[in-house]
Image 1 (tube, rainbow, N blue to C red):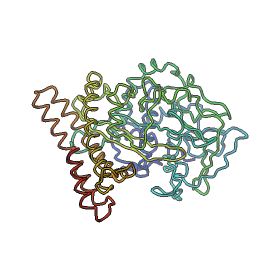
Image 2 (image 1 turned 90 degrees about the vertical axis):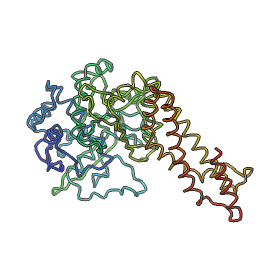
Image 3 (image 1 turned 30 degrees about the vertical axis):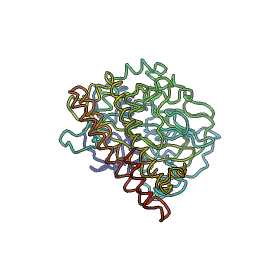
Image 4 (image 1 turned 135 degrees about the horizontal axis):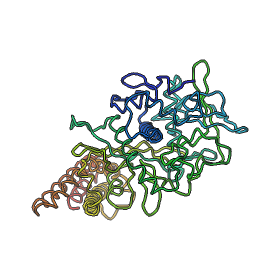
Length: 502
C-alpha cells in the first residue's frame, strides 16, 4: 500500500513523482522545490537521496547518474530482490513481520503501543513547549508528509530516553548529524546564492562514486557487499547490526515505527528497543559519513552547539587542521574549474530531551579558494585567529561601556550583573561580524601576497567595519540600559568615553 516506487506520491513544483521519478528529475535538474518538505527536513532528505542513489548505482555497476525513471526503478528494485512486491518501498504493510519503507520488521512479542496520529508527531523536532512549531497539527497529513517525517526521524534522531535509541552516525545521544558539503551555484546568476537541488544531487552522487575505493580502504571495517538499507533486515530485541556487515554508505534507522491505514488516512505506532539498531557507540559517530566532519585526534563526529555554524566554528573546522572534512566537503573531480560553489552547513541541534533549533549556513566560496585549504590552512588559521582577536577587542568594549552605564557611570560600582545589559548588543555585533568575516579574510590573504601598503589598507578596512558595527550596537543599546535618571547624563557620557577609549 502506497508504493513509492510505482505511485507518484512525492510532489514537486513540476508535478508529483515516484521515488525513481524524483531521482531522475533531480539528475536532469528539473526540480526547484518539494512543497511538503519542511525546512529542517531538507538536509535529511538530501542526504538520503544521495546515499540511496550512490548505493543503487554502485550495486548496478554504473558510474553515470541515470536521468530516466525506468533505470532508477530497476536499480532500486535491485537493492531488495527478495521482495517481489516491493514491500520495503511501501509506506504501509499490514504484516509487521515484513519491512515497510523505513520501518523495520517487528519481532514477535515486541509491542508498539504508542499511537502516532500525525506525521509531525514522529518527526525529530522536540517542541515540548508547543510554540514556534506546534505539535501534532498535520491532521490531514498526506503520504509524502509521512515519508519525509520517517526519513527525518530515522536518519537524524538522537537518544530520547530509555528505549528510544539514536542513530549510529552521531557523537552521543544529545549530539547531531551535520550536513557539511560543497554545492555548485548556478552559473547564470552571480546573485543566486542558493544552489539548485539537482546540481547538488548530481554533484554529490558523482563525488561518492569517485571516492568509494579510497573511503572503503580507510574505513576498512565495512563490507563491500554489506547491508545498505538497514530497515530491510530483521531487528530481534536486544540484537544490533555490526559494522562489519554494513555498506559504508548504509542508510540508518533508529526507531521501531509502523504506519497503518484506515479509510485512506495514515497514522502510526511506535515502540521501544532494548538495543540500538547498529552497534557503533564506541566510535562516537566517526563512521565515514560522507557528510559529517570528524575530529582527527578525538575520533568523534562534529556536534553543533546553539551558535550553529558561525564564523568561529567554521574557522575551527576549515582551518585549524583538527578536523577531517567529509568527502562531500572536499573538491571533487566533477567540480568544474571556474564554476562558483558554496559550502552548505546544516544541522538540528539536540539538547537533553529538547531541540535547540535548526542551524543553516551557506558560505559562497570559489573553488580556487577552497583548493588552497590543504596548503594554506595554517596561514588562513593565523589570519582568522587575528581577526577573531580584533572582534574580541570590540566585543569587550561594548560590554564594559554598557556595564558602566548600568552602574550609573561609577566604575567602582560596576559589578558582574551589570554586564548582562550588554549581551543583546554584543549578540547583534557578532551577527553583523559573521556576515562579512570571510570576505575580509580573503581580502587580507590576497593582500599578504601584495605590497605592505595593500596589507595595511586591507587591515584598516577590516578595523573600520568592526568599529562601525560596534558603534551601531552601542548606540542602539545605550538608551535602553537601566539607570537612575539623576545619573543618566553622567552614565551615558562616561560609557561613550569608555567605548571610544577601549
